[in-house]
Amino acid sequence: MDVYSDFQCPGCKALYETTLRPLIDNYVDKGKIYLVHHDFPLPMHAFAMQAACYARAAHRIGKYDQVADVLFRQQQYWAASGKVGETACSVLTLGEAKEVQALAKDPTVVAEVQADIQAGVAAHVDGTPTVFLKRGVTQYRIPTGAGYQILARFIDQLLSN
Amino acid sequence: MRRLILPLRLLLGAVFAYAAYTKLRQPWMLFAMSIDAYQILPQWAVLLLGHWLPWVELSIGVLLAAGILLRYIAAGAAGLLVVFFTLMARAFVKGMAIDCGCFGLGEAISAASLARDGLLVALSLVLTWLARRDAARAVNRV
Picture 1 (cartoon, helix red, strand yellow):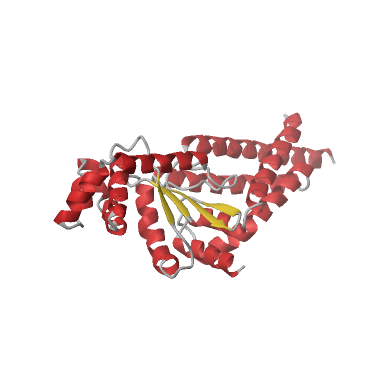
Picture 2 (cartoon, rainbow over the protein chains, first blue to last red):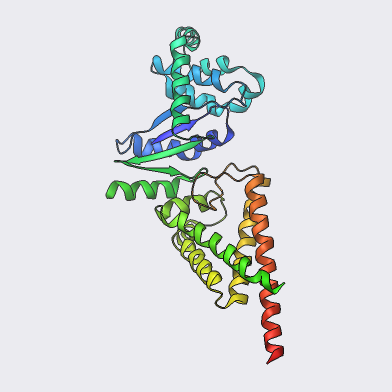
């Protein structure tokens, strides 16, 4: 499953909280599907790029899940205040926070986010969240706003074939 | 005015048939997910509609284009379009960032999609009125 997401987008927060969390617990953690997060910060969201860089930086030290989780949970706070770094680092130790703050400005991290954006454009992603489900050579675009229950049924059906 | 019936029923018939085609070429559960995104119906109803609504749309499209039982089918099509438009408008007003589900996948509800569906509602109501008037005149002639 490929998810193109923007940390500042309310629809992405809803997707993460109501669909992806149970999907991670019931399918990803059990090894049934792979979930690949792609950053697709939209230009209209002033702090989305910065948030994506912090999440990428956290990934480099193995703390992606914690930072992504707090960025979505506290989205309203940092989207209004611009305190992205403070929010992202709130779930890290002092040492980890310093490392992540430095990495978030690393050109290679920024380049990774840019590469994700390019991949999204190539995949005809025109908004967030956009979710693709791939099984073999077949790819399905999942409707925006799809709930967990029916998505899970669809995945079960694909897995049973 | 009577001359409008043929182009109107062909246009609306094609629209319904195309809407059905875009859904039937995908696994039906993807359309069920589009319905589910509106957060109105229970899961059993979502699954039922996801499975059968495209076939209903196809039937309406074919019957409209063929002009069979026109006043009833046109009224049914108008009723269906009014329901679709109302649900889309509700989602738009509530700020729900969801797919429209009108013509396949990947089309978000927007002012443009609402304007298009509003136009289809208007055309279907005109067709219903013309078909009823035409049928009433035919009865009077007899």
